[in-house]
Image 1 (cartoon, one colour):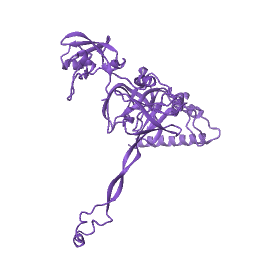
Image 2 (cartoon, rainbow, N blue to C red):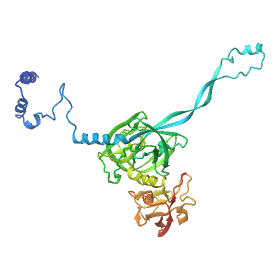
Image 3 (cartoon, helix red, strand yellow):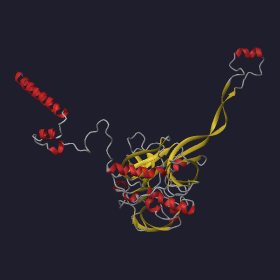
Image 4 (cartoon, rainbow, N blue to C red):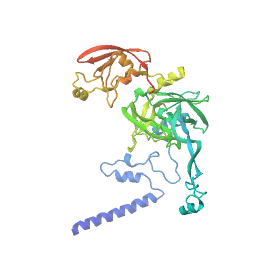
Length: 424
């Protein structure tokens, strides 16, 4: 024990001397980085390359300025600068009741005064109670959107502008305000297009969401919490082709397929804002966030909205093709559960009190039945990566499609003419 303590003392004493010597070298006007380089070069595993500071890696001292951003940082900065003028806030206003104080009715007013005194002053003439006194226009919510054409066409979420009785105001990045008109709401997707009376606006460039890869940069810009406009958050594309069920008090619940998952922070109020790549192109429309999770948000692929934009620009409305079946995507587990001979396709089946084939729909007119497995549309197989809904969305209202259907072990062919998706 004593021998060990003596060795420890000698080591500590030597270390102290080394520290003093090093300090004198460092504080000396002639001290240089080569001192540390020479010292550590004697130790195996160290080299001068790992110890000599450079102009770009040294720690900042007092009075020194931040060095130039890296190429990655600069790409983010450039993308935000390019996109921000095109991102807008969407303010929702509604007529709400005005509560006033009204004089309370005295239930004992017809009694003689001597009897009224028995009840004290609780119903005197000065007593008032809350009552409704008309209504006033008041801000009740906020979302985001972005300009897609210079003449004032703006893309946002359907759930942001879902109330037909509300009034909508668009606030540009410059602070200028415009009254907005809802042109169209997609009956199938959480997409809507609104219009303001303005020209010469900066439109955002639309990217190609079919080329997305896991891990690539994702930038969200929007009106976070309805009060922090043009808030920027950065993350990555953390998932593709997700299916989620989004819900809200004003619009119920809706199942959204094939959405992008991202860890770029998306907050209430970001809905309808753009999700960008590092080039500043829109790759998605921010739509939902998982409550209670840590940075799990979702965006609708921008390619899903391109068709809607084109239709509204040409005809002023969105036409969405509709087949009219409820189905379960078939995989190996569904195949085993229902004793099917295939592990792909769409099993036509109802549930929760809803029929498998909607009465009067194109599917009903084509002869589809509960228990059928739709294998392909116009020769393209239905798979997990290419579900029936995606294939149907590629066609126009009024087009006739050919369905390959497995029914009771036999493959048959049916023809269906697509109709307009019902608003209900």
